[in-house]
Length: 174
Image (cartoon, rainbow, N blue to C red; front, side, top):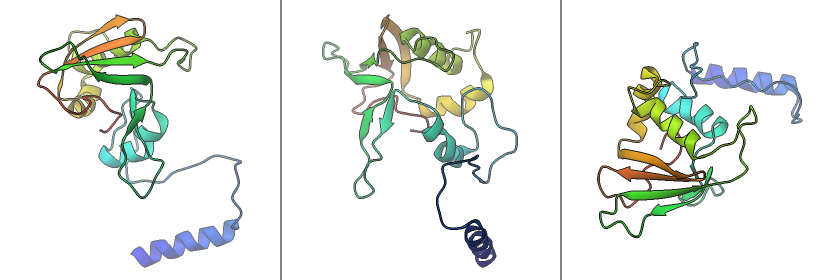
């Protein structure tokens, strides 16, 4: 089976020519369900995250994928900076400073309220935007998140259920 697939791919590559082109539509074939979610949460497990979550959606914090020869660390995404609140003796309070000037596709501002709205969407069962299916897929990726709040327009505070050495929120699929 693998040889047959390799032969098909080789034939398609040869027939299409070897020159790369930035025109047209990019289509990615993958083993996934044929009914995608429209809620902003990727589905189809790890493969869905690999092909869509990391490439389409912006996260507060991203993986540094700039090197293929060393382990990936964390780099700013929608959060310009993040870290433990040094004044918190429990070491459970994280502060995220958001990048300013970021807009959603509709032109509205990305603010701390938007982060809270999205966390409520998967954590708070009594919020109007709560989505049980998205919660089922996304909540397992941020199990340490306890309470959270907007401190100001561009600052979010997230308190974890237990002390953590690493950031409680990374990117989709962390």
